[in-house]
Every structure is written in C-alpha cells, then in structure tokens.
Image (cartoon, rainbow, N blue to C red):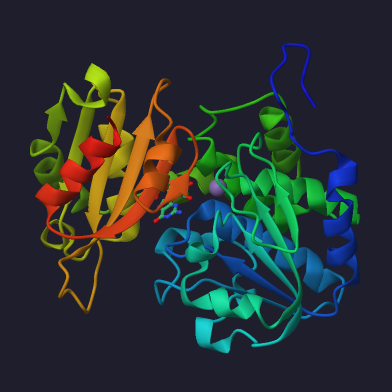
Length: 337
Ligand code: 5GP
Ligand code: MN
C-alpha cells in the first residue's frame, strides 16, 4: 500500500490478514507469548490483544520466558492481570499468538508451547521474521507490532477504548523513539489512541523518561569508557560501550537499555553497539552478553546481527552471545567488514 510519495504504509492488504482474523475470532482459548527481556511493544501488543479477547469471553493467558518479573516501567500498563508466570502457561491451547518475536529463539523456554497449540499466529514487524507460525502477519513496514495489533483489532470489530489504547500507545511511542521514526499513518494512529483520553505525556514519561539517581553515575562510568573504532565498517566507524554487571548494581533493565540511545547519537560512527552483560548463573563459557546494534542509514545491522546469531530491523538489531569482551568486539568488527 504505497502512499503518493511511494513510501510503504503496509506490506499487507486486509485480505492478507483474513486468516489471522478468522483464527482470532474463532479461538476457544488463547495464549499470547511476548519475547524474552520484554519491551513496551511486545507487552503492550500482548496485553491489548488479551483485553480484546477477554471481552469476547475467550480465556487468555499472556507470558514471556525471562526475566521472572515484568520490568518496573511496564507494570504501569493495563491488563497486567492476564500475565502469568512461564510455568503456568497451559501446555495445550486452541490458539497461540506470538507478538513482536522475530524467531522462535525469542520465546526462550516457552517455545515448546508452540507444539501444544492447535493453531499458531505470528504477529510482528521484523523484516528478519522467520515466519514460524501456521499463520504469519509480518508487516515490516509497520513502525511497531502495536500498530499491526491495532489493525487486527479493527478487523476483529474489537473496541479500542482507553485501556487498549494505553497498551498500544506504549508500543507505538517506544518503537518510534518518541515519534522520530515514523511513516504516513503513525500520527493518525497516535491521534486516534489519544482521542480515547489516555495521557500520552504520562505514558511516555513512565516508559522512557524515568530513572533513579544512580543512573547518572552509571552513565558516567559506561560512557566514559566508550570507544570509537573509526576504520571499522569500511571507514564509516563503530562506537561502542560496555555495561558490566558491576556497573549495573541495583539499577533496572530500563537504565541499561537507555545507554544505546545515547551512544548511537555519535556522529563520527555509522554503527553503534552496547554490550550488556546479563545476570547469568552458569558462566563457565564466559559471561553472557546481550548486544544492541544501531545504524544511521548505510549499514543494515539486522544482517550483521543475523551473522552473529540474532536479528532485528535494518537500523536497530541485536544478538545474544558469550565470551570475553575483547573477542566479542573483534567478532563484531569482523562482521561489519
Ligand atoms: P534492543 O537493542 O532494543 O534490545 O533490540 C533491537 C532490536 O533487535 C529489536 O527489534 C529486537 O527484536 C532485536 N534483538 C535484540 N536482541 C536480540 C537477540 O538476542 N536475538 C534476536 N533475534 N533479535 C534481537
Ligand atoms: Mn517492536
């Protein structure tokens, strides 16, 4: 569906969505799975869908594999009552829906629930999506999975009221970087959600602009040791920072995830990376790292992340890996050549 300017607004027609609508409107029970280390787009999408299904009197559970507790900032979203711990997710269900998951790996240990589902629907906006569902609604032109869910809810005839709008707005405002990465239609959706009476400023502040004081000294340490590798990526440059567990202390994932948004603004480098050491009980093969990659316009970091076992979007991707940091930096610089 290109606009007059030729920009893609969606890669999917309403007819492409029909099998998913049929599955969603005929399901007798639903499990909604979000990705591990969940963000506002996966949880907002999952809870919005759960609220709509519950209103149709369909039993629904929402879950994610890790960590054990929902990040603090996401506890502000409506629909939290539908969340259950991974062990409580039914082994068998009529319909399983994954939201914002580009591959089965993103389900973590909950991937086995795919086998116990009579039908599966994958709803996502990652171009790298492996289409692991029976029905796949993957719109890589969509700015957020929440936007795809909004479209599905409309086609299901589900009402987007204040609670559903709050959940969807959470995904939309975070995945667009507070409406910096937008397409025709982004603001129209935002307007429609805001019309329900949600407080957009308050939602954005809770999700993106709230950190404890300890965030400031952590940033100072981590950013103070950032490195610029100018010759990397054919001279376009790589900037990276490392967040070790000792830098994190009692801080939350929200503080750790904020680092990439500062590092990526470096104008000397096309590519930015943040290596985030994960809490990990079994570290015999070296520490476990979750790596965030960002690029500005000429490097496809989803391809780089895919080479290193991960995935994502063209300008925002990531992967999970193990080992000493020097080796990981050299694997990344090699992948960028
Ligand atoms: P972030 O840097 O915000 O954690 O992730 C940026 C993008 O990369 C997200 O769209 C996310 O789906 C993807 N991503 C991050 N980490 C991983 C990972 O370990 N595996 C895969 N497949 N994708 C990831
Ligand atoms: Mn997303």
